[in-house]
Image (tube, rainbow, N blue to C red; front, top):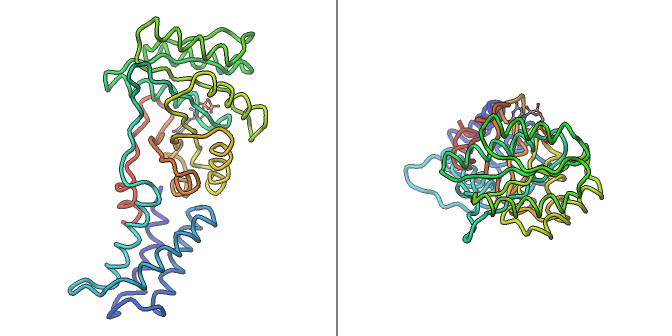
Length: 295
Ligand code: GDP
């Protein structure tokens, strides 16, 4: 998925081969190539600009290191900046003590939110944590059915009160039910909309207020590229997120969204979705992704 980006960056390094050291002049072309690479990968324009500026300043200020070629030095600067922008290392999920840990799932419709809720429950089970899934999307009966079906498939209980109940009340009763069941994690699936909408945000904020989750995870569809930045900003400003799950990274995506989420919200991507199957969830390791991007 990041092959095109890696290829582009290759031409950036080439512009520095054979040079004695990095200078303000010979870095220009390399930076232009990096910028082009980022924009082609559908990284948000402002995020790309900030990134280039950071790299430019560090590259120009870099000391010449004996035995290290300028292109290698430049690759290292870009690598470090990439890791920094995505978060230094894997950010595990919060674990509340006393339990249960409450995880609120947020995101637009169709991003893979419901699937991600189930994937997360399965992932937790592999860590010997037991989850309860809670269905609060009362606007789409199909969404409740989908969660119930997924729950059966992975053998995780699902709490729902149909489509007549109030989402805030469902969430609260879901948490109470989790305590009664003795599970250690509650994953609350919420209603999405096709685009950002005041009512959806207000409802999310109300659920958040009522249950005080330890994690509010924004589910971001990697296919949205540039838009991921605006979406993340809106959710973070209006609801407040603690992290994100970047889905559909297996698809024909250029991956740019991976660079935007933390840059605009300060919150890390915690997991990535790499397929439709319920097993297709992986913890997100920024350093591994940076290595892959740089080839
Ligand atoms: P929601 O409306 O946000 O709850 O989205 P759903 O969970 O219903 O997912 C929407 C569609 O995206 C479904 O067809 C899922 O199978 C698919 N989907 C979810 N996550 C992924 C993923 O990581 N990769 C791929 N390829 N498809 C996914």
